[in-house]
Image (cartoon, rainbow, N blue to C red):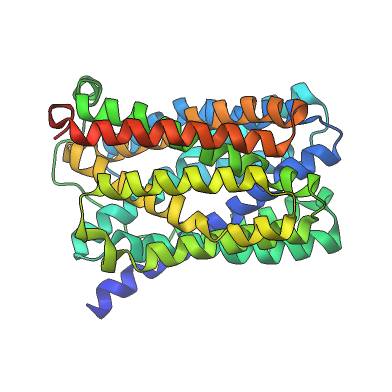
Length: 384
């Protein structure tokens, strides 16, 4: 067992460093774009490029991974693309160039987290351990980075965002060379096999319904930094807010083996939906940034529980030979389509009506999604 655990060290460290790099983009890119002179609506356009591109890039790279039966080689290609494109993307100041470079950058970046999670799920299944025990390292990387980078940017300035990002990206690439790949004992998929996914009714219905919850999650990802700044917070406080949130997420993942098997995953998804609803309505009513930071502890009970349960549930629904593709289609809905709606809609609302109104709309959306998920769970002919 010791050797098995040792073989997971590079994967755990890769999740730590990639999500550490990712927090720099998620937490602080909106502030960099604001520093470059963009309005909330224009920031929404740039942020929407990532999820738009991910809808195509994630299934594409997932398909390539399944076709050539390697996650490791695809990760290496994507990480090299990430490093080269990020240098240009973070330096752009003109909106059309920003949008173009964002497209190239996100084409390579979008699938990395999903592929690493897919690899973690397969390795966990192969070793008979909890997926959460591996995935928690990604959350820890996000948490540590959000705290440290917030302090670093206070010193070096938001305009130098590319420096810490590039360092974390290089570390992730080095770790990717040491990954243990997963060999699947099935024939490589053909393009026609994708029909199996598209005709999988429970899978497709589930992907549509989770949009109501995931849109609110992605809107918060994009705009909590600007919301806290509206309320009087600075980069350091934004970093602390992310640290509190993602630490609670890491704890949820780390202790998944204690709570996760007790009920059907849809029960946990519904519970997370209720928590999402309460969380956003609370944010809508509060005007004190320090209270928002405290409420970030609910991030683990919302996103952490929701993501782990949804990922586990769709793994049940997907044929083994389509695992990478199925996982990445799920990711392109969870982070892609949701991200487009959240970035464009959220940018316009925060510009016109302010952050509190934005979170009120998010509360209503999460409530609708929770009710639909209860209906889905109670109608057994919809699902397996």
